[in-house]
Structures are given as C-alpha cells and as structure tokens.
Image 1: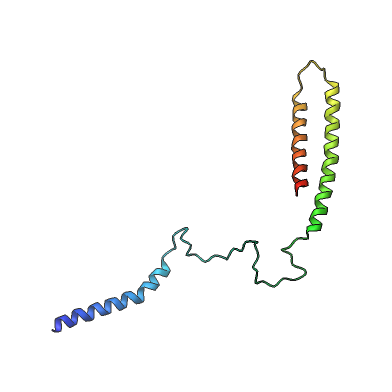
Image 2: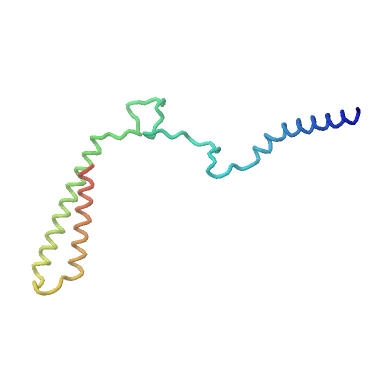
Length: 126
C-alpha cells in the first residue's frame, strides 16, 4: 500500500508541477509566424476607430473641396505644359522631310506627351 501512495503522490506532484510550469514555458516560446497570436491593432474598414472622438480639426479627414481645387490647379498646369510640348512636336515635325523617317527625339517627345495626357486623364477621373 505505501508503494501505491508513493506513485499517487509522485503523479500528483508531477502534474501540479507541470501545470504551474507550462504557462511559463509557453510565454518563453516565440509565436509561429502567421499564427495570429501576436498582438495587433484592430483594423477598421475605413482606417479609423469608430469609437474615437471626432472633432472639427480632425487631421485624418481631408477636406474634399480643397483636394478638388488642388486637382484642378494641377490639371490646368499640366494642360499648359501639354500644349507647349505638342506645339514643340508640331514644329519639329514640320521641319523634317515628309519622306524621311522620324528621329528618336520626335518619338520620345510623343511618348512624353502620351504619358502626360494619361496623367491628366487620371487626375480628371478623380
């Protein structure tokens, strides 16, 4: 009988020791990457905490009218630049012989014009 008590007490102390040490060992272990156990900030759909206090001077919300005015100014400046580039290209084309092939500078200028036109189109879409 004493031997069975010894086994029982050994098993109980072993289990108790394991239960007390297990949380400590789990804290020392590094979480597996991508397991999601690392603490992360909660991501909200619009990028803001809906429970956060909002004020008039909220810097996270840009003024849409100010953005629209800035886009309009940028579009106007880009259109003026586009007009100058097209005028220069037209003058270069008029100087070249109609039977000759176009020079590389003419082709590059046409590509720059196309790139600027796409940029203006993107700004105009909003």
